[in-house]
Image (cartoon, rainbow, N blue to C red; front, top):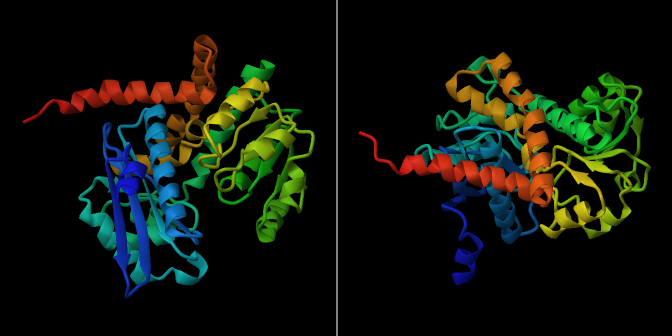
Length: 356
């Protein structure tokens, strides 16, 4: 028992959800509600074991808190994971059972799409709880949050380009994208339009085929492992987390890393290793906040123009992170965490005042 509480000691609440009749096994992790209700997507994934699922929920919910704080949102950080194969185990009954568990939290956690869940799933979950975003336009939602996630990553990449090369453009740069699903495919489009040379890979051949049809100028690499050894200006991890570890960092030739995946650093020490090697790393929870901004905008009634304008500010936020890192002689990750923690402390303090 002590080891379990040790694992979750930074979190406000962790809920284990079970419904044997539907096969539901899920975890909802609430890291912080200092700035407001926790918001974060639901990931549906066939984890190797329950421990791996818990570790993912804890790490992702913490990142969501920092992401919301850096994005200037009045939201906390939460995340949910459903253990299972979404192609085999997902059902209406399971999703609605999950929705009942969300409802039991009374608004402390608001869900949205993530890996393995989609807009249609959110509409099903919303039949049991109102604490759902990322819904379809037919139900007043914004639709696929990958739209603004990709746009935000592109803005963060522009900030990195300006910091590294003096201009906020990727024109003439070679960018390698690992993972061309909801976010990576759209990111490739932004980069091609900006004049970049794009190389892309994915374990899903159908995703590569779709990208090739949409953007014929993108160079396709069938083996994801080979992307690491190419001469790149920018490497963009856009698949699952942990892509940056001791082995991959040793092989990478890119001088900038900026992608849409969550929790890209396998360990905190990787951030220092990248900085020592002269590689400019744009913290994932800063640059991929566009999706959070998009679904958060639904809470007050979705406005595409308002959400896109807020997501465009990721360029300035990323630039501020780089300036703070230089001024305080810390890594960009440490700088971004300081920005988030200062806002959570300063604004969160006000919530201790009892209002009538």
